[in-house]
Image 1 (cartoon, rainbow, N blue to C red):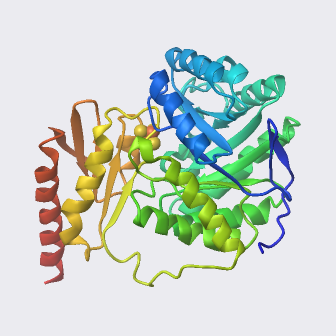
Image 2: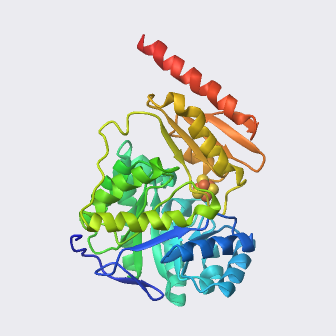
Image 3: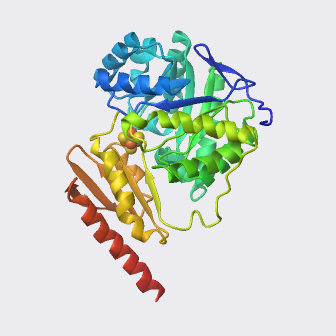
Length: 380
Ligand code: SF4
């Protein structure tokens, strides 16, 4: 039995989230939204796997048109992920049941306009169309002012950003919202969500470990966070983000349900204390922005290739697009972000060049070897 949750109940069409409602399990289409047949196929795969809610990203008018067509062909509950282009909210609102905005992305467009006005616009759209809202804070795209204010207190920055946005939405008299605070490190996810839940015990929480990567490590990282949070009564809905071939995306739902069942039954999987000591590969789960489907295969190849370095405490990040890829790889020792024909290689924040898909692995190995050799030389 899970401890009682104290959050209020919100509704995404007929789905209750929060309060005493069962924990909802959701996922996201990994395909390009404008590819209607492929995205509909994703929606069906996720629906058949039992998804309570399916998120689809929109970036452009072409994506909005595609979403309208997808809506015509499915009855699934849909949530839209508003990337930087938050003004698309009014265009997609008739086709979806929930809007998700990322506070960090509101700074990219119309820089002169106060964030509060942008939030008021989004709340206005949600009210008009009777949609639920998610304030989705992501550690990889935190608004610059929080970075400045909190310095090294990274968890403090993401938790406070969520708390501040809740206050803005509250002031606008809107209650049908939930919050997510995601990071690729499950320890930060636990800390940030605990801090948020202590400050706002009334707000339903969507749990997630972002860029968890491929199974089994991606599942283990997610379990570490969800077991700790769900067992404390924190978490009303969740998504397991895994880097998987598009046709296997239903596994995110199966893993999410199994995880909830296990925690409810008191079945916890222990993780050795040295789990975080060795090589860490983070990889995005893909979304409508993915530039080349080969990205999934590449992530698997990187994992295989780097197996020899598993004892080394290094992070390799593999990201699927040029929009979030450059920023989300900054904190990794080695980062790859994928374009349509080339893969960009970075060492920390330094760009090392772009390489064709069939040439990137040996180049990455070269950098990995160099990094290991440098560290060993420093220790000698
Ligand atoms: S890195 Fe790009 S493709 Fe991957 S999930 Fe993020 S936005 Fe989507």
